[in-house]
Amino acid sequence: MRNVSVYEESWPLNTPFTIARGTREQAIVVVVEIEDAGIKAVGECTPYLRYGETAASVMAQITTVIPALQQGLSRHELQVALPPGAARNAVDCALWNLEACLAGLTLPQYLRTPLPESVVMAQTVVIDTPERMAQAARRLWLGGAHLLKIKLDDRLITERMVAIRTAVPEATLIVDANESWHVEGLAARCQLLADLNVAMLEQPLPAAEDSALAHFVHPLPICADESCHTRSQLGELLHRYEMVNIKLDKAGGLTEALALQQAAISAGFEIMLGCMLCTSRAITAALPLTPAARFLDLDGPSWLAVDVEPGLNFTPGMLHL
Image (cartoon, rainbow, N blue to C red; front, side, top):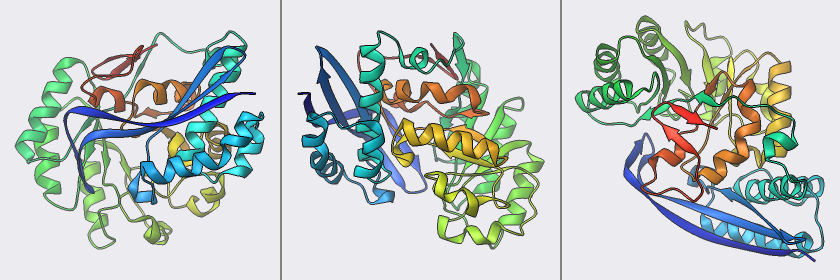
C-alpha cells in the first residue's frame, strides 16, 4: 500500500508581486507526497483564488482521493476522480514523478523529451509607476533577460509601455493584462502595442467577454490564459486567439497539459508555457512541455526569497537544465 500525505507550504517572496488583481508577498502551495516501493514522489500546486481555490479547498479535494491513491489509483483514473484544477495537478504530477523515479529516470527522460542545456524564459515586470517599471526592465535587460513579460492593469498603458520600450529598445516584450481591459478602447491599445513592437498580448479581456474577439482585427497575436484550461475550450477559442497559455494548475496536471498542447498545435495555436508563483518542483513537472512552446513564462521560483532544495538553476531570463 502506498503512503500518501498532503500539506501546505508558504514561501515568502523576495519582492512584492503586483498584477491587475492585487499584490502578493508570499507563494502558498500545496504539496502531495506519494511513497511506493521505497520511492518518495512529490507533486506541487498553487491554489488560485481567481478559480475559486484556496489551500484549504484544494487539500480537501485531495483528501477525497487519498484512500484510492493508497490502493493504487492510476493517472487515468485520476482524470475522472478529480476535476481540472490545482488539486488534480498536485496529485497528477506526483504520480508522474513516481513513475519516472521507479523507472530510474528523470521525467523528460521518461517521456523521451530531450532538453537543451538552457532555455530562454520571460522575466516578469510587475505593475508599478512608469518610471519604476522602466527601471526594472532595464535592470533585467542588463542582467541578461532579453524576453520581458510586462504586467498591466487598466491605467497608464501608454505611459508605462513607452517608458519601458525607451529603456529597453532591443528587448522582446510580451504584455499580460490579466483580464483587466474592456472592449472599448481595445483596438487603440493593440495598435499602440504593435507600434512599440510588442510580440504578443495575453488575455486582455475577461474570459466571459471572449466573444468580442471573434471579429476583432488585431495587429499582434493575442494569447488565451484565463480562457484556456483544458482541451474542451479550444473550439471556443478558434478565430479569437492565436496562442494559448498552458499551465499545469489550470489543466489539472501534466496528463491533460500534454494532451492540450498536442490538440492546440493541431488546431493551429502557438503555445506559451506558464506557471503560477511556485517552487522549482512545479517547474520541473512542466519541463516536458518546453520544447513545443514559443514563449516560456517559468520565472515563478525566481520570485521566492528561498527556493526548495534542490532547486533549478535560474539566471535572469534563463533556465539552466
